[in-house]
Image 1 (spheres, rainbow, N blue to C red):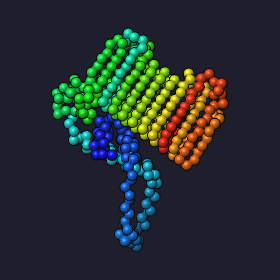
Image 2 (image 1 turned 45 degrees about the horizontal axis):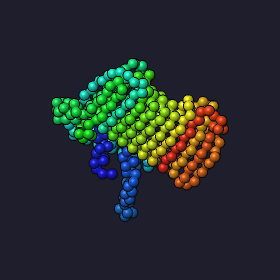
Image 3 (image 1 turned 180 degrees about the vertical axis):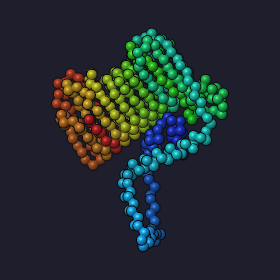
Image 4 (image 1 turned 135 degrees about the vertical axis):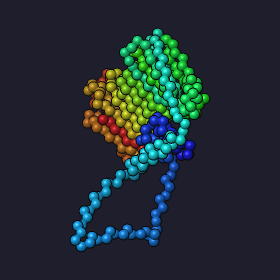
Length: 359
């Protein structure tokens, strides 16, 4: 990983676009392809035995024994904690060396006149949030965070930060590519009426994407390294991609395709209708929480991992395939009522080094 990539990640933390723990995971993911440098051990001739403390003088009380040191964390946990500490310390100093950042909020509102509304939201590194509300019209809150030598300079940047095209037939916002990502970010939160159906296309560099309570005909959401969260949503088709961020989906999704480079994926199907989920992650874990499925809903799982484990915490599944060897785990299992069920949930999960858990 180059120095510029490291500085980009540190600046993302300084701008509060990602947390220190997310930065640590990103740093580890980018370094995964590089061989660790060999550890040089001191030769026996250079080792110096520690000098024992002098015995207490006659009449002095014997000092109490020091408590045993806390257990040493595993290599992964210790490295992760160390990276997080370094990220937090360095970004504090790193952010102070830049010009001040100013925020410029704008509110837009209107009424959609069509029943099926297209939404196109493209931001450089800012977040994108869609939230349902019980109002007849929509409201968009756009916040531009611009860095400049003065507020006047930052305000000039903010006026050219994005373009909006909105009317009764749809809403589109696109951030300008004129400015460097470290100087400007556009964040948008869109409140949407619940009586409409939407077609979503959203993309952001490193910000997070949130879809909450919205009904979608189809949706595509892509983030460079930010997390993607879908809560209480309804969608016929949903395509989610993140470079290294986590993905979490809870809702009535008929056709889900979710993939991330090294982040984790958690899916909570509801089974209100038949669902097909395809989940892929490079090295992150996959969790399928089936606890909210009704008893009459059939479940079929096809889980495959390289070096990770597969854990199935349901006793009612019948195994069609169960291979667990070094470097390869593959199970195919279904509920007893799957073939006769009117509503079925079919999940295919693939991960390189992560684990797969069926709850």
